[in-house]
Length: 113
Image (cartoon, rainbow, N blue to C red; front, side, top):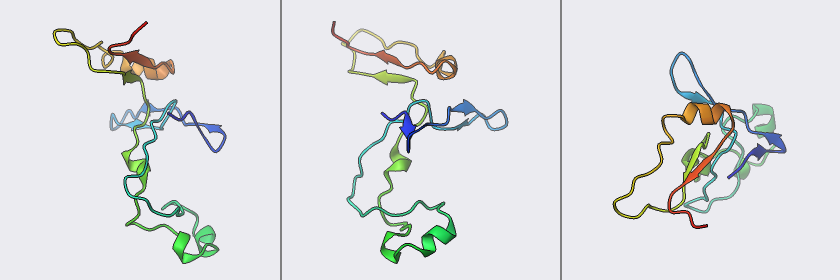
């Protein structure tokens, strides 16, 4: 899980009042590994002046595996292990926006002491 990018805190996520969707990625973000190995490349949104100074091999390539799209943003709950049969998970979804606002993360599941 990441809480910073390039030494700066991730932008705190909050619901957009117009769409109801989350904007921002923090306070925590789950980073996943690449599924297909590919060389590093510039971001799709890189400044064109920057891209012009970079060799074509390192500019943005659509066909590369960009794991950012597979990552989860605004983490508020982590399920550690499936619960035993006959038990149920904690209700983390009802207070999710409050957890997000308070920068809290709920860990639940078959936790051992």
